[in-house]
Length: 572
Image 1 (cartoon, rainbow, N blue to C red):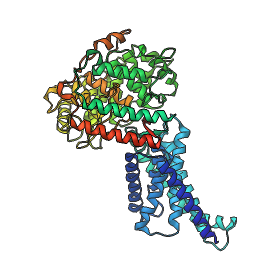
Image 2: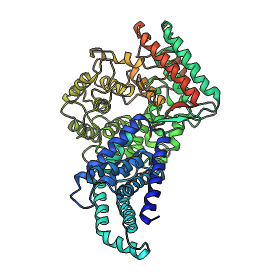
Image 3: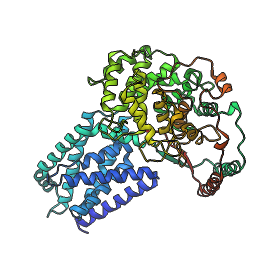
Image 4: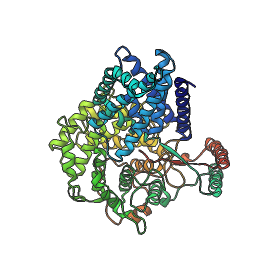
């Protein structure tokens, strides 16, 4: 067997193993879709710069995919980009080598993110990694040229590498430049998109676990077919959601994306805000012989490297009546002020700027203070022509960022301004026929985007009754028997996070949420809804629910047979 053939066979086997690894990871449909889009973007980047030898953003895009999504999707993006782009540039034995090289860049991105842990990679660090990835890609492709040489020894490889060094250096420099321009924003956008739909699969501990899923489905069918009685006050949407969140708390005081999952700062912060919106002080929520939310946040305070985490923690501390000026030996307000840019933004990002303004107000800053005014001015300048806001000023408007911006402008005392009126008009125009909102206009409704829209309307003091359809009715229709809210009518991802946001919306509470009195938990549970109201008689399930319940039973039986059950994942 020749060098060329043997190397080709080994690489083909490695690629087959890589794609098998990708399939065994059971990626959700939306992850598959995101991988396809990123691979297409990498292909376009390679073709667009084809006239410039070895300068192309493909390696950067693949590495970013690995950093944001993990090694497995990163490998898939790199391998697919290589074979797809060679449809235009020419296939050959080199294709397998390029698939392996770019697939390896995707894996390296995932390993880099794992090594960084909770710390977000800086612009320079990410650029250095992209430069090294370009050099590694070139060195690997030099091995392909080496297999075609008359001799396969070290001097021959060094000679080939010396010839290709200028091209490999150009590749590395191009990677660094591309990363410095768009790298951090690209990675944050991917992470933000993924954490909305990440789903894991877990094998049940016993056969009884799978059988229990089928039993629950049978009960769901019976309940769907039965008439829905008027709910008792103690079982109102708010009190049921509070109970669900309390049951989902871990002994370390934190919350995971679903009950039983490990705690994260992200979901813990949102859970605390949801509970506070219902009148429950986060310090009153703890497991027997466990810790409360504030204790969990205090343990993670030394690791504040993400500005969003800093802002969210300040908002939580306000609801708990804890000063951010003296928290675990840190002055969080000083850190927040230092992170604000000269243009008034945080990270040049609409969402971070909205939450930065809200955090300043939560920490006691006046609406007339310089930091608040500069942030509000930035948000007004960042508003899109259609009236909404996007993730960054040049991005397409979306409901989530529009809701956040309206809450921030409301906290800055600018409810009556033209930007707020335009933002409210954008929300009215993008509401779906079912009463909810999707993240983008025309997308299917979901609980979190609907909650953002409701909170934005509340902050702007715009009447929900002026909307074509009641959004709170849509939200109540997503609540399940155990009290949690599903993400949408077809998805039940990250139920703890979703429930916390929906709880704030049905209580008609906008950020920043006022401090909740200590010791009021029992009174809140007994009182039920504060602002949400009980579902109407026409909110009960109809024939469609019975059909869906029957399909759910069929799915549960299939799941029980194969021995798997679905469990929602924790946001990245």
